[in-house]
Length: 287
Image (cartoon, rainbow, N blue to C red; front, top):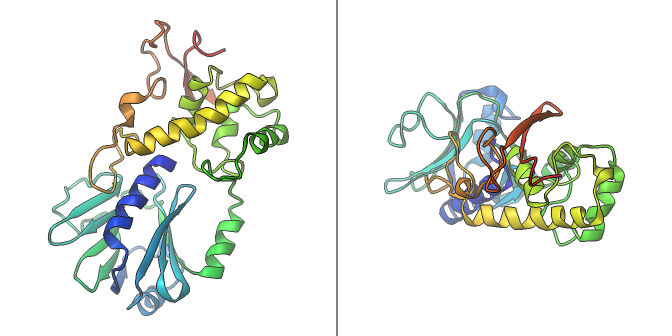
């Protein structure tokens, strides 16, 4: 699943290519991914303009004219593909049949713009969704998700961060970092990397952390996310950025997905199950 850096990269790519475009049509062949009847989507979206593209946690928001919005979650295997006569930009899971085969059997929704370009929503496993919402409905739906603060929110000060630890003292640190109700956007990849940066084992409880370790975790969240966004995300088998290119942060990973391999310190990277998720860590570097 794309995490904050991957979704932010997709958001920035789409922002450069679809803002200002006017929608001429919408189509969908899988009812469960939309929140209103198809006829309503067609009627409402026609002639609306893409005014901006934003992100909240791991979701993309297309802000439209006349106070309408499309809230999009790619989930495990979703992708957004912008296609015109001269470009094909993909964000999310790669297209199995190739970029020259659109729409394909995984295309479940299509936005057509007046200039004949398209934004395709593809999803192999059909877990993703796109909801058409008014400004007030968007605010309500996001509020109901009870999402935590964004990592780059100016209000996420060190003091505020410490207050979050006090709320959940018995959580394992990996679970804390992945809890979207506390801090929104971190997932399996970056929680492992932040723990490694702070030299703490992911199965440690929040209440066991020292002041120095808390400070390092706080610093590591922002430092690692910034570096990953700069590298356009982390790529394994299922992520491409909005320019159709592989993210380069995988080259900077220290422990995630490397269990059984040697750490830079010479120790062996181990794997543990924490709250139903896998965590990779170095027992020599992390205490």
